[in-house]
Length: 350
Image (tube, rainbow, N blue to C red; front, top):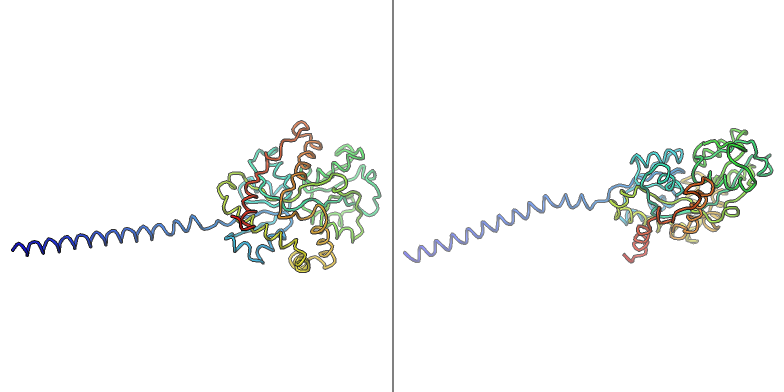
């Protein structure tokens, strides 16, 4: 009898342990099944929406074609807009995550629109030139003329104001500035409206304009010096909240910029300009020679040119009389930690 009772007790205990084990297993399985999608959802990169002014940047095209975005687990959507004013408005309204544009637009958003923007990486310097109608022979001859710009209070318009001020010409008093839109739109406007005397143009529109007989009166590199033009900027909160995804995207663009500037890939780069931007082969080749090989073009590793950005702020202080003529330090607008992390990823050290 005793042995029978003991056997029954052992059997009951084993059954209880087995039941507890099954319950624990089911609990773990449920936790895994419920937790896995949540974990995957949190780890999956959110698509980055990039706003641009001149179509998709060449580096982005290369990053897609060479698989750099895929390798870094980044999804991208890009939207091209007609003017920097529209782009700034869309960024302020949260209709884009990241902008690739002259970084003076980020400064303008901070100072004029009171948006908390941050520049996270560079990309290109400025090779702009003041291009005018064929019959105009000097800067002084622009007195009383209409000059066209993207927006009158940012970036390349400020370059124009500075160049003309060297000859004593001031906006409103001596010439009119008319907003038209991005560089391609301005070149079209110069062709179609002879009353528009000139505009600031950069490659490849610059090469096209010269081939068509338009005349260059001044170069930014000669009159202003180094100038940080296109770079990436975002709302500061978005950058913080999406740091990992942002850094991976910037790493992919750094790798694309390296590929772009590698002499081995010269003909492929020219072919991309022909195919993606529909440039004539001669214009694409001239754009390569200028943008890749000359000062003010693509920057090594897409770095922000600190001297060039300092010049951006100095120009805004002088021409727009902002900050009572004393520009703030570059760190007010540029957070280098995103770029440094991206550079480490691209270089395989992170």
